[in-house]
Image 1 (tube, rainbow, N blue to C red):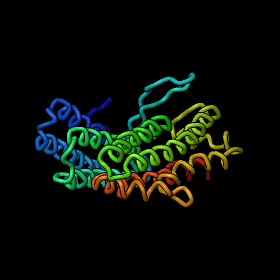
Image 2: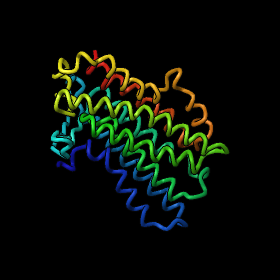
Image 3: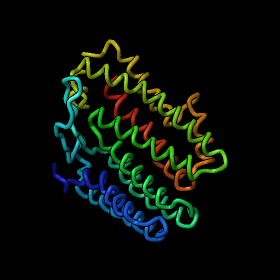
Image 4: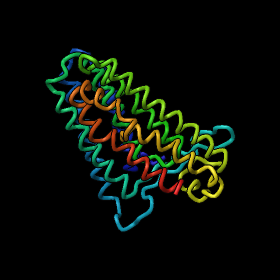
Length: 270
């Protein structure tokens, strides 16, 4: 794997800051904040570098990484990442809003600062992965990965009704994710692959079920947007989340649903 590829850097650089903070003492609050901020600024710089490597006149995937990774039921799961005109914008937005969110917590979060920053850096890994993954299993892993840190950010550092808001957020998102997982399993069974490029070229194999598949993926994405009547988790999450959580929730996480419709529903189930 080419670790100098900007896709690898923007996705996994937050783990470097995560490991550094892991070895700092909880009492070293300013040092923890500084490491988290510096890490996310480096990630944003890597996102800007990615932009310089991106060729807007090329409509296809660029800077592609596609390597065999896992074997599930005789099918290969690829570590398949790539960037195009849709995902480059989301990567830049995520890279910009994450350090801004951390700055907003500088004085607002005084308790359990170490845990807060660790979860925030993990959240950035998940968000970047969602926008760059081109294999359905890899995408699903990153999609679910964002759920865990956001749940704790709301549930631990949120407002008075934070537990209620966090559990509601978790249950709504997980319900949609189960439907999407079932659809992914069906797709792989029909087409024999999890890779997006191969699935698009094999659409005729699951054309008869595309309406149900569209709904399964669509409900998961509609919950995240969120669309009526699947939106009732959002007011609670926004009100109870810490400021940084609300910024990321509104600025990035909600857009993951719309991105999902554009990336998966439209090309796979036209």
